[in-house]
Image (cartoon, rainbow, N blue to C red; front, side, top):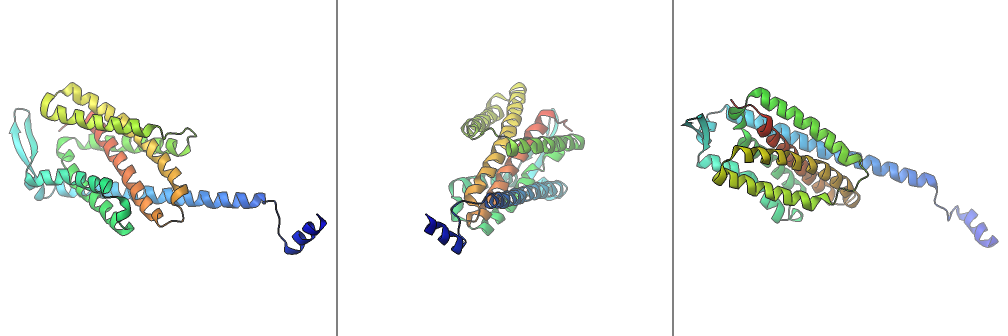
Length: 260
């Protein structure tokens, strides 16, 4: 025993981990996590800003009339998409399908970033019709309400000790149900009451998605830090939160917004 102790003293080694090492590692981890999440939020917010700018520019350009034609009805003029308008409206779905079934591993970080910014532009083009459908006050109110709700729900997802991973399957099923209900109401029922219920459920589903995705991205950092996937995880995280915010805003606008 004395020989082991003498050797231990001569080499300066110790068999007992120092508490300071654990604290240092945790501090480094926390700093890295904060930077990782900040990168995600910055990219997501920049995407939302780009979408809004594109929507405002497009609705005030001559190209808007080529994409969405004004059609007189008994309720007044409504905008109907032309062939160009349908292409613009369906393009975001193509991006989602490529990312979902194409496999993120196939794309480089630079490619994913280009896809994210392109998606934000295309979504801005497709969202431009809201400026002719709703009043400016309604759009502003829905946006700030969505921003406040998003911030609170994201903070909850980041700080809560409750495991939200079980929400994923239920929220996905709810989202599929919402999409099916929207299609049925659009082409079959055309019911105002059903549209109201869909909008309320849409707000609740994407509010829950915001908290769920925030916690998922926080937990994901443990697996991606220090790997080549870390940069891709930032882009895909921004993409997830971008969709949560935009859909929360759109459903809230349709629920509370005043039409022109």
